[in-house]
Length: 485
Picture 1 (cartoon, one colour):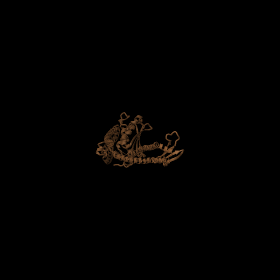
Picture 2: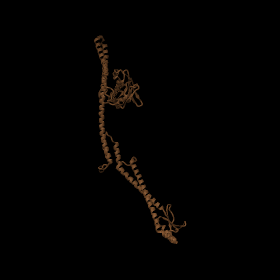
Picture 3: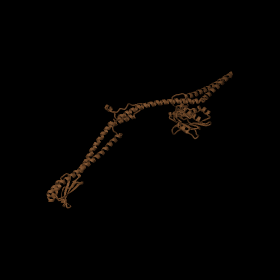
Picture 4: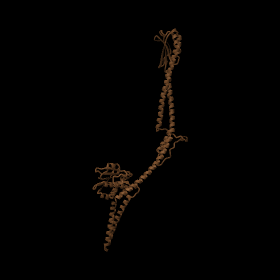
């Protein structure tokens, strides 16, 4: 079980708010209570003074009138013993003539009543009865009351806050901690057991707000797991579809490059036929004394025939590797070597369009890691697009360089063609969008997908000659192994 710590900000704020609110209520109620007690105390004092007036004023006036000094003093001494009364005096002709008691308080109530002869209120008064009541005792009682109220309410507030803290910890905090741990450990590829709160069967039978959250989290885990499974299945279908479309695109590219294939294979076959015919004539015309020379010449000719046959086989193997449907095969390869091979494959297409291919490759090998066939496919698509967009007599520049700042190899295809319109730029890499009459519209979208699969990028930029610059960027790797495609 988790305990209260400095991380439980909500609990600390709750306790603080409870203390502040309780303190405010305590201060307000205490002030109101003290005010009522003060008002009651003053009211009691006034009632006592008026009681003296009503019951003693007439007899005091009579004693003053009769000059009954002993009885008057005795009467004053008795009155000064009443609660709160500190001094009683009779003032005549601006001086105190009789009095009892002494004023000891700093805060007092001073009440004065005029003494008249009985039945002769119209004549000059006999004197003034002055009653002084001290308030220090009342204030002292109120001060003690304040201390008692503050201390008792403070203890009560902290006891209530502590009890609420315990309840919050037991009912909420410990469950929130478990819910938090469950949420942090959620993994959809490997579902964890459903969340169950530490509660009794009776508590579980009456779901509350926290149980509603737990039910929602468990349901969310199941739903997200199902959605993830569906997403993975959809991604697998998408990858399979992309591979099929890429395969069709390669077949389409090969269909357009039949003349290249014919030229590549026709040269070694023509050489083989020429060597064989020459060998036949040489054998027919050979004389017996030329047998040794003939054997040496035949050996050389047969070697040349074998080389040309192997050359034809390599060409066919290269084409077969390019068009066959297969899984991704990551290898280390030299970008320069790959582009030389690709330029040879599209050379006939360039010649038929009267476009020159110019290689401006980095002097040193530039090694990348990738699938040779897929990177060939990207390069062929970009170079073919550049050739088809160029005017007769134009150049397509194929260049490579190393971006040492980002440790990336950049393969750039530059043409001086008609460029790309503003509207087409927005859809350039979208599947099945093409400006060609007979285009499939998948070449650039597949090329972008292949670049991303190799942790690279494929970018377009218009150049100053009005044409296009397509740059394929791939992460550079070490030079331990170079693969020549």
